Image (cartoon, rainbow, N blue to C red; front, top):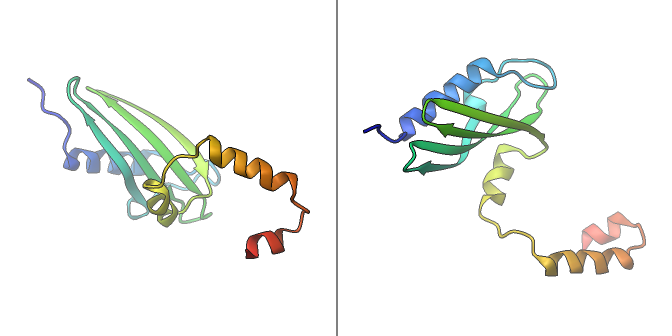
Length: 123
């Protein structure tokens, strides 16, 4: 029976990604120290895992979030350029999702919004 992935295997995957992936903005190779796992879930069975990884480019300072799915020997990844920093990902990781009340409150706010961001953001 195949063994499920372990944290050490996740580290190897991150090392592999940092080695082969380049920044989509400037083409610079990612640095392992700038890459961290935001979230991980092991799937048993089938053998596999899902990872959410954040990395910063040392050269241009852009950030990318990768979703990585491991299904046996196959690895699938999708990257997205983001303005979230590593500390932002930690901060927002455990917050609740937006709900319909949040959307309604924003709609009501925008209906009466004068366009003065300085006043709105100072409240």
